[in-house]
Image 1 (cartoon, rainbow, N blue to C red):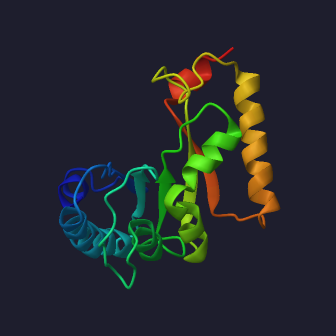
Image 2 (image 1 turned 180 degrees about the vertical axis):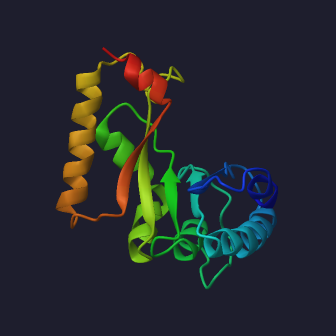
Image 3 (image 1 turned 90 degrees about the vertical axis):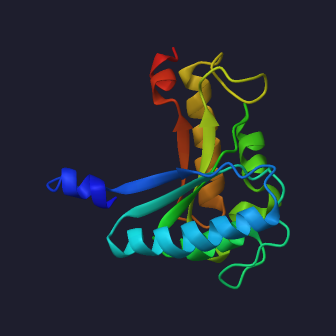
Length: 178
């Protein structure tokens, strides 16, 4: 961050996206990750007006034993730290229907914790060819728009939370959909 700002002093950096991917890590490694990245980098970046986004997969395991910021759950710790507009929990909930996207996103209660701590969060939709059942590369734009309508209707029904959204992975693929 300091190097970037020194090199480009006239630029305005909105935020930094951390692609966490903690699957399979043990609790002590995740504990160290939380203590260092959340405890230091987030505080530093937020204090400099930089929005922080954590891209995580709610289905991965290995979170038991985490204790950070008064939370013993990985998602609770992140959500509490990023609460009130400090950052976003970007949930890699990639699936090929709206219902599956929303269900996947809340595995291990990730969205529940985001709402509890007033943390911004996004549902993820994958448009690139990844694997059967995960992406929608073989669908059309109308299908994607229908998925988005369903997800946003559910967000509205749940109280119209303004801190929820959708992250479409591989925007170029989205524009290529017919």
